[in-house]
Length: 278
Image (tube, rainbow, N blue to C red; front, side, top):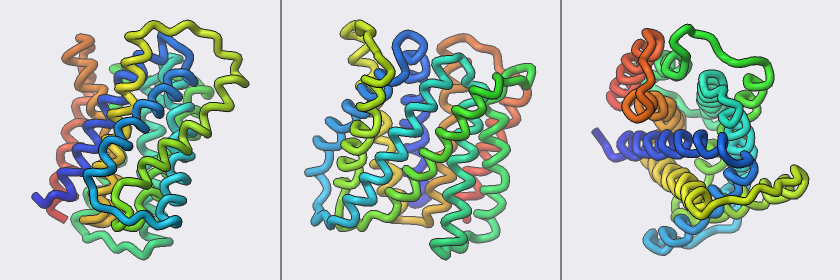
């Protein structure tokens, strides 16, 4: 296996851990606060990591990174709002599938990418796998509000992936840094508009920052993966992150695995194999 798929799968693992922890936190604190603190933690990680990658940042690449950050800010706000409502079975699959479908379509129609036959088969398997892996045991989900949260989050996630992939490799990971700044600036006005007055404990602040650090690490891995393979493939592999919250729910929270989730995990494994071989 080349390093491209490995990096994309590492991105999925980091995102899955971030969403799992962030979803739990969003049930204890206001979702805007969790999103903002997360992006602040991500900014710290990105700033610490950036000097390790030789770079000559170009203004247009930094602008693409900033646009990606706007997508991140919107995506995380609506994702955490949905998770805070306890509707993970709806918000996660909708946001993940939409976050895959839109970049794939854009990659093929706008960027001129041409995945192989095996890769197309992997994409076709991955989309239903993402849905199945996040379903409840009875196959039901939440209401229209949770579905709307997931749809808006998916647009933000798609923008995040597509814009970041346009950054010049010579810019290193500085586009991730500008993205975290843009995400903070996107979320910050909502903190006041929402009249958030919550008093946060030090552990809550710390864990919120950790979720953002993991998300920033995921974006770094994704950005590096796009420089070694088609954006379409990197997006699909990175978007397999819903499997992580499901597995953690089984092992950590002692949740029972439904047959739909089991089928989704098997399908996700098959999609990974097809995409890496393609």
